[in-house]
Amino acid sequence: GDRSIEVAYFADMIEHVPQPARVLAEIRRVADQLVCIVPIERGIIADLHHRWRVLRGKQTTREMFGHLHRFRTAEVRRLLRETGFSILRCRVIAAPGVHPATFLGRLYQAPQRLTRRVLFLHRWLYGNTTLVAWCQ
Image (cartoon, rainbow, N blue to C red; front, side, top):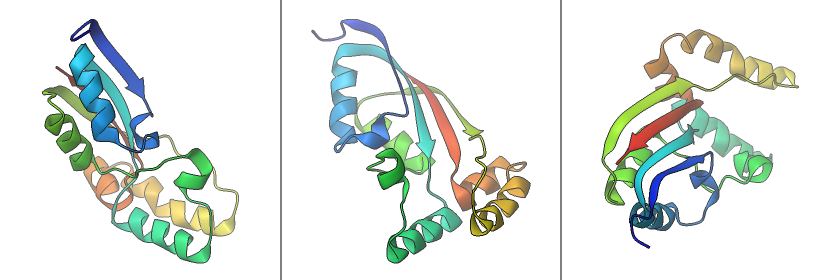
């Protein structure tokens, strides 16, 4: 029934569902609080890189991981508010780096190692962060 769960928790889930607002609305209906972890995959350079991969027929996070959505931090915050949640605490942390297998992959990630030290710049350019939110 309504508000029958004290705290709902999900990690790396909302980007996999076709209608994230619908899922969050149902969680809002049954849970008093929510803790969520969402990968932030959008940024200026990340979006250009994604489009380049699509145009070249290369795998994206959709094919590799089943991500139906690529979020920006502001989009997740808006989605939470629109489905009735108040964000009590929210933190964006740098996602762990991966070791690319190709020269182009290493070339793409080289500047990320530098921007990772300035999180707002890294998030703006590359995404490649994780949003952690505690909501009520």
